[in-house]
Length: 594
Image 1 (tube, rainbow, N blue to C red):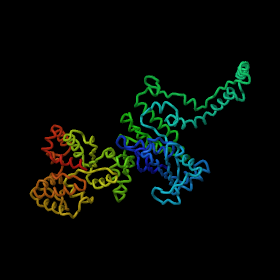
Image 2 (tube, rainbow, N blue to C red):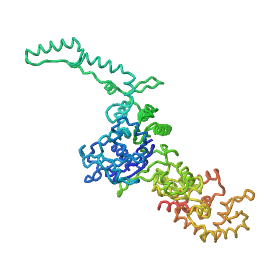
Image 3 (spheres, rainbow, N blue to C red):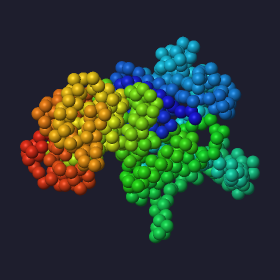
């Protein structure tokens, strides 16, 4: 299915120069006032150009320019364009199913608008075109068939206006446009009846009413006494069928109480739900139109506003179904509930800086491809990270290998700094396994997300080496094995064939306990500190003490032990935590410095 696949925006509002990919279903996330709404407006504008205002120009001395790529224009799609002359106009500009268009404006009047298509003979196979030419005759109509006027649903500035009136640009107007065609086709007698009435009531009707004709004659005769040479006629206008809908109101009936109210008298949450329901209805009206070459863009600003969490989840599913029913869906959101494993990989993080203006980070799917070699590793990293909606809403992401760190670290941070880490835009997320850390860090870096990890000491001698964060043959590796071999006879823990600790159910020794023993030994502590420092440079904090339980002084692992450690942290003051558990403060200061 064809879609708008790439967008580049120059000099539009805060968008100095921003590029972003678009899929069939693309969430835009980011802090307030970062430009998400401007991106939605730019998408709408490139497909339906209109005169801009002065405030739309970031630099009033430079033109606004939006470049868009339409992908997936297969021969069968072109073949379904109704007008042959339009098919003939667009076909020469489609290469491998791809078409590039550009719209620019040098001023605030319609005359300053220009619409161009890539000069295909001078453009390379890949990348954004550098050579353009004016639209040939028929091409605008062909583009409009493929991607009709977008349906842009603003945030809740005036939802009553949007849904209560059938004026151009509103949701209700778009809904009426969708349903009017099949309605009139199904009730052709309505137009026939109105034509009959028109012939009877209008001044030039073929079957003008005798009573109206008599009025025209008598009134004109009376006027003749005052102003000779003038005549009167009563012309009664008969409205079109669509006018009946424009004059109507949207009402809501409570099936339980029987209460019937106008839409704008409902609660805000109910209004937003109805708005989203009507949008879903648009998809239903399009379902089954497999022979249509059109794919309409649905652009929604913060669709989750005022909805209950369960309503947000249902909305997310509804929008996903819309994307399968002929729409391309692009929306901005502040809610992690609007992201799921199915759509997180295509989410675009939008930011803004004074130097660059609006920025768009690389989506997860593209970052995984760029950062990891090998399809199996790519698939695993994509699956793991797609489950972590928190990474899209934080400025710093801290990867943890298990639930103990995931639960204790945010609590300790809150107690030490007097506020939860999310207020400092820090997210602690659990990967479930430290084996995924070496893959996840370069992916997050490719996405432009500042990220680090916290892991147990054993990571420094296992997955850190396998993942390429540390050299397998480094001196600290050999030193660690030597110290472990020296300690093993006295303590009785088990070493596997590679000289590193392993769990042993018979003796009761866990590998984590062996590493804790290693970290308390004089030589082992020095080796652990050296490995700790080396991994800090690679973005990973390993506990030199062995694991987080050694930091808190807990004797056991498991759920009961986690609850006990949580309660102890809650009972301690910031000064007590810093004094008794100094490793927490050192770790958090390092995270905050990244």
